[in-house]
Image: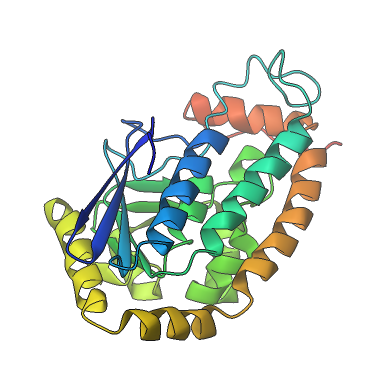
Length: 267
């Protein structure tokens, strides 16, 4: 397995750990998603592995994509030299879909911020262990953007369509306690115990029949991977035209400057 540049993997008993190592914010890109997918697929082939914990170094679980301060974005919403952005994001979403097609239970240890695509990554997991200091945000509309990474499917499944819409429409940050109340976080513990609690839950799962786990999980998740794949096609279509708007550039700039954006709504 590996070698990996941005993650580390280890196994304790029947539980595997994948640790994202891009501190402090753990911004994601296609290379990181490919490494996580490769590790999960390798653990699928390891008959001794029964559950996987996804954790991260640094202050954030995953702060999403790094758009910078917006100053370098051209009229297409791209940085100079960034070609075929639509194709690149399509490739990212195709690689991301590999995560949904893996077979073994995943527990996300969310000790800090899970923002945008980082929230999408957390929603790949079957369960999320968090703390009061954790922050979950689908901040796409605050960027003048559209949700991605399959969140239009995965988030409503977990928190209800109404709660998902509230997160999408307001772009608000949801703290760990509120996330636990709405079912977004399944376990809530002190911040310094998040990873240990995730490992404990994974170990409890791993006490059970490995074939029974795989079979039951496949039934429970059903056609989720196919639904996410179809959703990302639509999400990308919406993101592509929104990326070209002045509102997107303003949203990125305002976020970098920590102020409310001044949107105009003009195409």
